[in-house]
Length: 146
Image 1 (cartoon, rainbow, N blue to C red):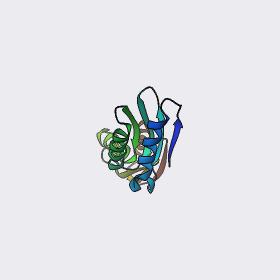
Image 2 (tube, one colour; image 1 turned 135 degrees about the vertical axis):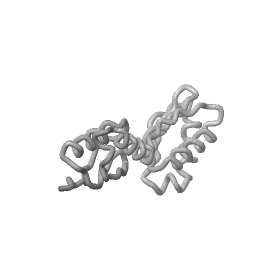
Image 3 (cartoon, one colour; image 1 turned 60 degrees about the vertical axis):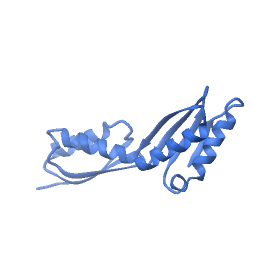
């Protein structure tokens, strides 16, 4: 969903132009993109979520082109980037580096899937996943190998 949250008479033309051009993009329209557009003093702010880094970059390019001389503050969060950050964090932590798990973030929910070696490793994985900025919730789909 692509929506406008803040608009006033002085910025409405630019804000709505950005909205219309983002809404025309099928990749953003047909995915689970959730983009909120607001306008300030010569600044367009994009907030919300997109599934992939490609969609993040696409929304950024479209908004910058539509905004013209206005600047764009892109605060979108990519689920794909969160997945990579979560996996990297777990891979670097000595408590979880050898866990046989994978991560998938969807709309801010981190899904942890696979096998862990102990309850301590399990708890550490869930803690690490939940500590990544942008992750709203963690769903546990792991089993403890016996």
